[in-house]
Image (tube, rainbow, N blue to C red; front, side, top):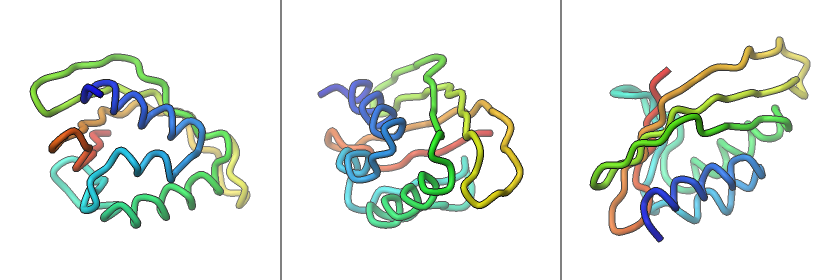
Length: 116
């Protein structure tokens, strides 16, 4: 599977709210982080539990791939994210765009960084 196909499969799993499938495309020590900043989900298990929490809070959460760029071991998506109403009654999050940089090692995603 190409890195692009893997990143697209991760988004499909994200949109299906399947945290287990999403992390199956990641290395064991993979993480999700803010670009050049703090890690927000560390390791496969941290990512799985963080996504499960987010999916429970925003059951209508979706990310649409607006554009794609591929180079060597990186895939960059411009994603349009909609959350929908939160189950905890918190204020509605306005839809937003994010650049997501997927880094790959040996065919698995090792890091996702978000630029917002």
